Each structure stands twice: as C-alpha cells, then as structure tokens.
Amino acid sequence: MIRPATPADIPAIHALIRELAEYERALDEAKATEEQLHEALFGAHPAAYAHVATDDATGAVIGYAIWFLNFSTWRGVHGIYLEDLYVRPTARGGGHGKALLTELARICVERGYQRLEWSVLNWNTPAIDFYQALGARPQDEWTVYRLTDEALTKASGTS
Image (cartoon, rainbow, N blue to C red; front, side, top):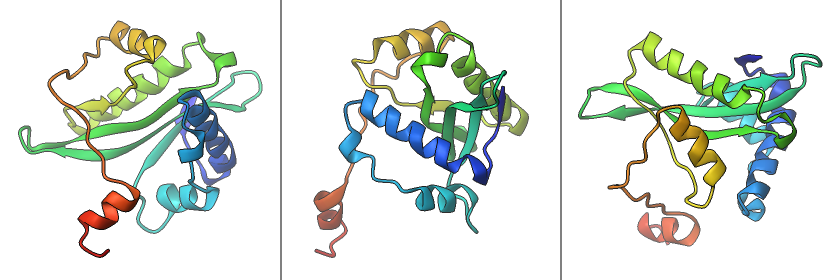
C-alpha cells in the first residue's frame, strides 16, 4: 500500500499535485514540471523524498507524501517536514493517508528524528480533524511567513 516513490511515479505524482492545488484553490500557483520533480526527488542532489500510496487491487498511485529534512536547533537533530500529503477523494477512508503518515513517523523513530511537522490551511476542516485524531496538535503560537516572486527578489538585493 505504501512504498518509496520511483522515477516511474513522477507523472502520477505530478497529476496528484495538480489535484491538490485545485482542492486548495491555488491551481495557478502549481507550476512545478515533471522534470523539476524528477530532479528534486531523483537528481544528483535530491532535495526531497516521496512515498506513494497505491491501490491494492490495481497498483495505481492514489496518494503521495513529499517530505524533506529540517533541523531543530533546540533538539539538536533532524526532523521531517511534510510538504504535501494527498489522497484522491475516491480513495479516502481506506487508510492510505494514515498509512503515509505512519510510514513517515516510523522513519523519524528509526532515524532518531524527533519531529514530524507540516502546515494545514485553516479552512481545511477535514484534514485538521484527521490530523488531530492521530494526535497531532497545532502550533498556535507560530505564524508561517513566506517570501516569493518579486518580494523574494527584492529581499535578495539583486533587483
């Protein structure tokens, strides 16, 4: 049901990323290409990792998790930052999302990582309920900030 992604999974992962972006009302922001995903996941210097959930009957990819390592200066060890977790609506309720998170938690414990973190949109009540049912708790004291596009270029001093 859950396995590490392979290069052959890139088209399916790319399609699922676009589905997630549409669900999150931001399809116009999903600009990653299959080539970029391949380089990020399987290039000479991978920047991220992926696991896929497959349909037991067909073997088709029906969900994915893309993650990368972060580091806690307070704990002195790595953790996992979950960038995306998505399961097709038609496959939800089958345990695939939980199995993806379980696999990432297993990796954390096996490798001595002490955190598994991610962000969720405030309006995404089904996801929030799912995460809280697993024991995850929001970090209410923190607000995510982001520089992109023109603001990023300006902040770099290169504009």
